View 1 (cartoon, helix red, strand yellow):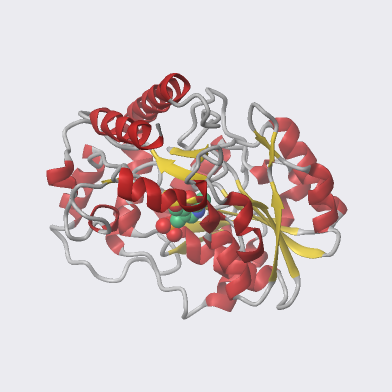
View 2: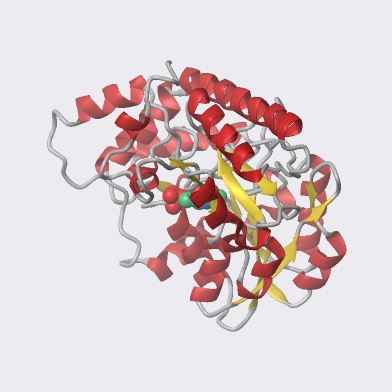
Length: 385
Ligand SMILES: Cc1ncc(COP(=O)(O)O)c(C=O)c1O
């Protein structure tokens, strides 16, 4: 695939929020979608599907897609997922909300690590729960869990929300961290929502291990996932809430029934095609993204050595610490105005009282053609010089 076939002229279309949010001269590297064409087998399946009427899909879940997801789950350690342990969603975020709504009580504590993908803390607070954000620690070589703080936070909570791989730090929790997390949720008798949407975008070379891969935490965990990050199909909207305990999945979905909506017929066709034939495209895309990550790492080391950044293990999102800069107090606006590069501002990744901790950080989406990435990095280097 030619990852450099699309330029700003093709990308700046009216229904791309990423490209039309800011003026034409800005390179957008904020919201998480990729500036690459969709895999040809997905396009072919969609074209074929459009030759037939678009009636209601199988509302209880498409049996073929359920089987494909069961197979995919098994490859990540989630063996024996029952067919009725897979519920379809119109996106992953509705699954976060449905999970919080059913697995915690109003006014009670829900724990997550911060910084974190903002709908995590928003789901908790919007639903009237108390968010307890446990800041990740900067070990000097990667972002790590503060075990003592997490243990204390969990003492009086209902639910832990895990982002694995973690957006925005790009960590993939390793075997030892997963072991400790599992022991912790058993010790505190917590339910767990594990968002594993970025699992296929890994650069570690290691197989992915789902949080619920360990039998001891199966019955207390639901996993939410979907095709939209790996296959760049966010505008189609589909996801799944997956659990070994079908009764638990049913309880979550019943509380949201009628509010949730069902995924579109086209998104079902898309996910089927992605799982059936998307492997080669995905492998190529991960290799290109790894190239971008390495290019960016080398650029930052050479041109902006004071910027703190750990090469991500997964995702196409980099978490940059720019607190050393004089404009750190308003860094997102500064870079928008001076470099004409749009980034996500660090504070959005934390609940209100913890936002000051992340002032001076930015999240950078590096899933764009490399010449454009280079242009953006040059602009950032000039503005930050
Ligand atoms: C961790 C994580 N979960 C969920 C989503 C959004 O998923 P959806 O668009 O399917 O709701 C994102 C998007 O960036 C994400 O990073």
